[in-house]
Image 1 (cartoon, rainbow, N blue to C red):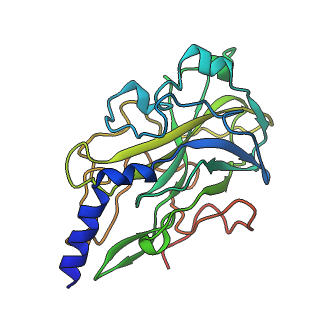
Image 2: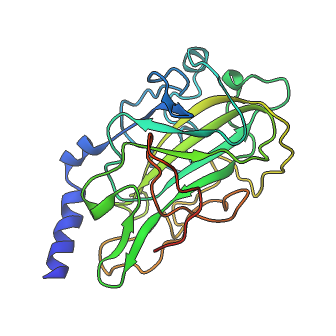
Length: 264
C-alpha cells in the first residue's frame, strides 16, 4: 500500500496543475518588517515559473533579474550584521525541497543595483529536512507533513559579515520531479542590500552562479519518493561561518531558534 501511495504522489507531482504551486521570492523582511513586493527584491520576468537549467544565466537572480530596467527599479536596503532578515513569498513554497540563502558582495565602488552577481557567492543559510523516517524518507522543514509549504522565513545575518554592497539570493529547490536529470525546479529572488558595520570575516567557501551546481549533484538529481531516501546532501558550498544546516523553520513574526539546529 505504501508503494502505491508513493507512486500516486509522484504522479500527482508531475501533473500540469502543479503549476499552481509555483511561487516567487518577492518581499524583503528586515527586523520584523516586510517591504513592498519588488521594492528591494529584483522583479522576475517569467511570472512564477521556475528555472530548470543550472547552467542558465537566469540561475543567478531569476529570469530578467539582471536586466537594466529591473535593477534600476529596485531599491537597496541598509542592514547591519546581526539583523534578522528573510523573504516573504508571494504564495507558499509549494513543493518539497531545501531552502538556501547566498550572498555576493559587489566590487568596491559598484552599487548593488549595478551588480550582476558575476562574482563569488557564499552560502549564509540552509534550511533542509525536519526529519528522516526509515519508512517514508525525507520530510522538509519548509513543507511540514508534505501537505503545504511555508510562506516566509527569516535568519540572522552573520556578525562578521564585511561591510559593502551585496546581493542576497534566496532559493528554494523543488524536488518533486528531481528523479530525472533536469527535473529539479529552482525558485529564487535577489535582494539588494547595503551592509554597514565593521565586520572583518572572510566568507568561504565560495562558488559562482552558474557553476555552483551540476544537474547531477546528489541533492539535485534525487528520487525523493521511492525507495525512501535516508539522507540528503545539499548542493553547493557549505554554510559560512558555521558549517551547519537548520532543520526548523523560523517564521516571520515568530521568535527564532537560531540558524543552526540538529535533526530531532
